[in-house]
Image (tube, rainbow, N blue to C red):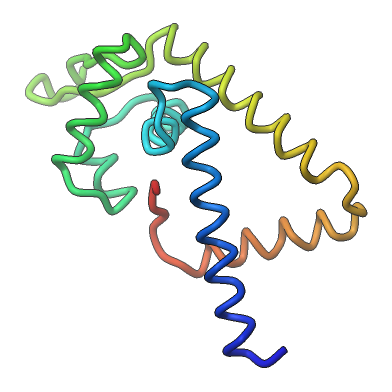
Length: 145
């Protein structure tokens, strides 16, 4: 396969992958979009942050993040707290329900990946993981969807 054809195949398959990820996120929890799931994961990893930090990290428009955060607040998955170091700033944190929901969806996603990859040889799994890490590291800031 020549390079141009390989890149075309990669682009097509990554698009299928992204569409499947969006669809499966909705099936796992109807109110939790892939973007919302990604934002919750970032909040868990960071221990909380400002909405502008989320927008910058994922290269999203601030209004998009604002809508997502508002929806997550309405669902009781995140809450805003005053920054102890700068009382003018509101930090977004996961609630207990947000942590529970994130853990549930994450485990469901892991199970789906395990099932889909169950028959792959260990060497292929390791190579695929290395390629994904390399691909994502070369692409600049991650996107949420």
